[in-house]
Image 1 (cartoon, helix red, strand yellow):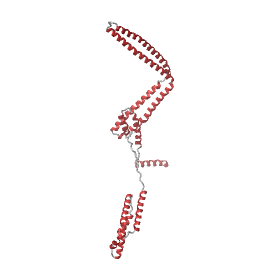
Image 2 (cartoon, rainbow, N blue to C red):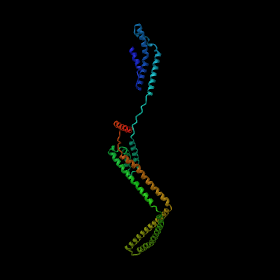
Image 3 (cartoon, rainbow, N blue to C red):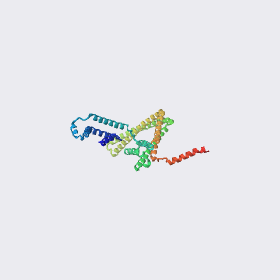
Length: 347
């Protein structure tokens, strides 16, 4: 009995290191206590009475099995169980929360990732088929964010394709700058002023040529009429028929020349009006042309300082070499420092 009591007391006083184990133990004690404690108390009381009378009290226990179980002992057990549960919960709450250890960020890898995004975005303007352009854009994002000495064969090929696409974009931007500069250089006030009389003289000449061609139509109409009359005479043969067909062909050709001369006159009138408008809007047109040149040059400069520089950085970056200072180096450095500090004192 004493051994059982000691075991029970030691079980109650045992400390639980982890919350799940302690909670399981408390629940087990509660179940066992609520189920067996009243009978155990009754059996122990009967046994003590039996020991005093020289018997084990089995008969008395059997007689008293229908008696009500003592409520005082049960309430005490329940209170202890509640206290143990509260203690376990409080211990769990007070346990320090372990924060996850964050891995150190590689600044070089982070910069390569950012620069690769710049290059990948610029490749959207590459003059490539849609499927190829989409593949290069997506693959270059991963290839350029990988150190050059760690890339596999496919990634190296993607980097080469991206370089060619960027070169084509640069050439296109250079062409736009060249064209815009030529447009600005074409602005010349003297040439613009002299273009007006030149256009007027040309228009006059075109109108004269058109009048001559219209006058020729009359003679061709007369030839057709004569050939038609000759063919209608009796005895007219195959020669008269051919002469009529030739006259009709000449008349058709003359009509086409007249139509072309009329179109030339229209073009000449538009050219004269354009020359007059150029002189009238010379300053504003010059400013527009200069603005286009500035925009083209700005785009080229931004492309060279942005995507091209980013590509150069990513394509050439290698895995950084970690440098660590060994204890021996630290010790030698400390001795040298101490020696330098002691020299003035010795002097």
